[in-house]
Image 1 (cartoon, rainbow, N blue to C red):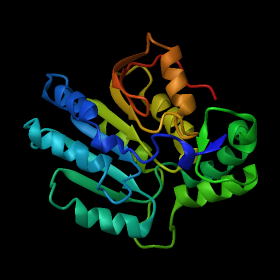
Image 2: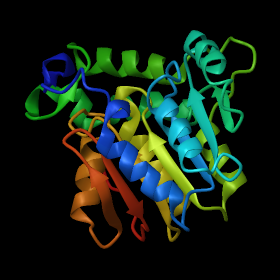
Image 3: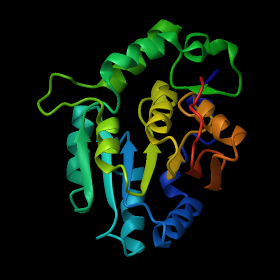
Image 4: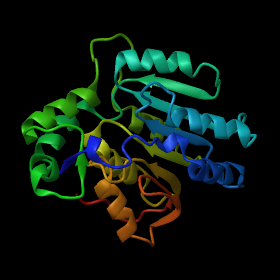
Length: 242
């Protein structure tokens, strides 16, 4: 694996892509627009969350689409909450997208992460042993549990609250967690149709998720994409294997 800072497109934000904006506008203006968009990894709310919200407004769906976004880092969450107040249809959630007890066992047992030096064409955020990276990604994904208002398993909570609605997911949490979030989402939505947007396709975060979608074309129909991101219509009938 190489450092993501060495990836040629690492400094290009998906949120600045005119192709993505056009694809989102087509989707939001269609009769099958998502009623709820669930995003993991808000950061400061100035990237993907912003482009989603702007496209909702431009498509004329501000009364019909709600965005729910999750951020584990407390100070990022506070900044995002302030930055997104201009969009009343956006809800910000502080805490971990997954059950925190599942995260470290997954990271320490992830063969690709533990033996990352054996993989080429896949990128990672920093160098170190598999154990060091698991602890680092785990701390990033779990966040500040001692802060007031912290919750975990927010992704599952939001899915449960919105089953029966047309859903869209943007999965963008801590780098090592992409596959587990993807597996969790597919397991919860098996047999149902939803939209899925993945960024950083060459990163360890989503390389396997992206490859899985491409290898199951009967379950994932690509709506749009570029080198670093993909937007798909998903209707999974099989669980995701590592």
